[in-house]
Image (cartoon, rainbow, N blue to C red; front, side):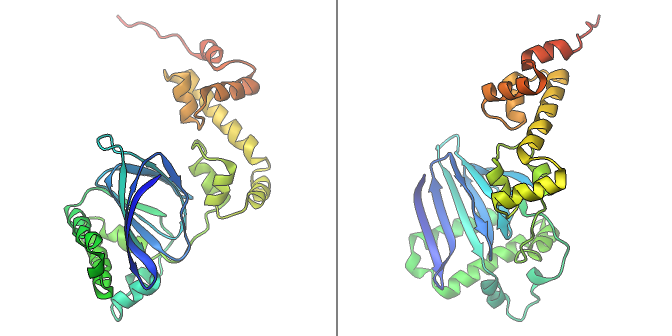
Length: 286
């Protein structure tokens, strides 16, 4: 639940906002014509992008380019809330900001990652704190000031140790790439995502996703994913000391009872019995 939202708008669009949220909260933003920078004052988020997963914690930030995402916000252990500052980057605003300067964000580069996380940087911390004045006094956040604040953030990011990666990322911000089905599946095979959510990350309808999946893997998505997860579960039962619940979670099932039923359907034996039958006894050392 969103507890409080402050925002600063430019030409009818929100460019800077601060949100206080009571987690757990899952959001599924789609950035078609913008990139987004998130800084977490409190709490954090687990982000699922088409081809990667990333966790951002308190005092850390992440840059997201055009694409589709799932963001699971989590609370601060101290305050119980999640507070995030969001800066939206629109192509036309960046073009105006940089005018005749070299538009590094439109240089041709090979496709990179969807996300790039930044650990705590003092310069970024100070920039985020400087925005509080304008949140408290929105009438002073005039157009010229907002343009300058956005430019300030970009230039600060370029002076961090991650400058080269950020340059590469910005070069591909506004050319949305389509992840292929294989990349999405392999990246989220053991994540707690539904087929509908995987189709969403691939930028396809569920019916299209299933049809293309069948053509590519010669199997249904549900059957393929279940078999892969059960195989990993079997390996973990054989070679690890993780509990059944921990293994269930690691292979993508929050409900360990449901996991056990699926496992028994696959192997005709309960996970605990499979472990007893397949784990090699440890040889005591003297």
